[in-house]
Image (tube, rainbow, N blue to C red; front, side, top):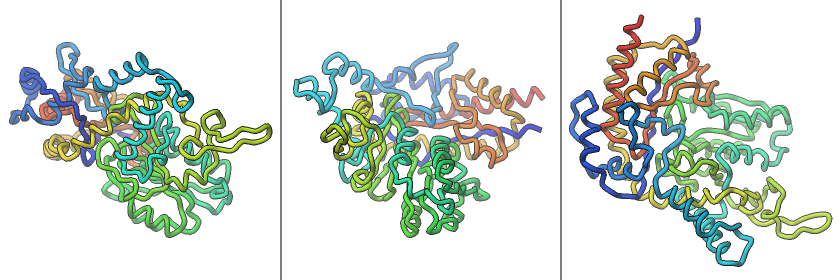
Length: 439
């Protein structure tokens, strides 16, 4: 019999907001409320979701007369007008190489680029903007970390790399490369009976043989959050480095890299209302300075001689200045987003309260028998305009551990509203009624 697939509703600890405040029309609020089946008190016009969603043009469209409810933010977030405008302005007004020209266009581009780096550093409370390295995405940042580390760290079969079964493929496959090339052993931390990573098991597996600990901050499937500060403390006691996949936490909660204390932390732009094709890695300046260059090229050098070269200080040493100016576009957002962190929890609490009752009363009685039927499950939801994610979410090891082939995930962002939660719950009920009536 095929393993079952399940529905998982993912609502991390909080979400962040943009700073573009223009009130949405009252008719839009009435229309969304009219679609919802449950009778709920209308959300105030000044709510964060209503105030910011007007700046996201993609959210204001219908599919066969049904208003879009975008609940696939764990995969990618939508982009506001400001991102599109800034990209357009750059290419129209000051497209030029950064750090390499003395003319006005290059100077303006360089100022914007380094200004973005400073904004990112402030956003995650880095001690120095030079600790922020722009990459093409979080996947490249993770690969970068293992390519830069001294391979002697993993050169013996007795050495270990610790991960959890809940890691994203991007945080697993690079370390499989390390294991295959060096002989280091991969050790996986399992789940507790509550289906979250077993932190006590992780602590117990640590030893002087442990050289790297690779962990998520917030799981992209489970929605669980790990105690990074404690894990870093345990790791340092045995001399292990720590890499934190913060792709799901940086867009949704305050993240302080100095407080967390990890050696590396990575995140991705497209989950933060920024453009695709850019991310960043944080590493302490001392750590980055001790590493060899990643790519040889023009930006990473200090001087080039016939037989050798000397290298620039971080972050230029890592030679990622080929990253497009999307980098500074993304991080124009960080200055705005942090202003709204205290305001983001209302819709999440509402969604959780609605789902708690729904799951206890209805969802636990419903089991989808195959991955194919999971696709059939997601499709009726979109008949209500609700877009969620179905599949393995780049976490096949986790799904095997849970005994399922795939799952369905609903994930919110700061521009979602209570009315949309009502539509989602109503769509879930209709979909389950429809599918159960077919059997």
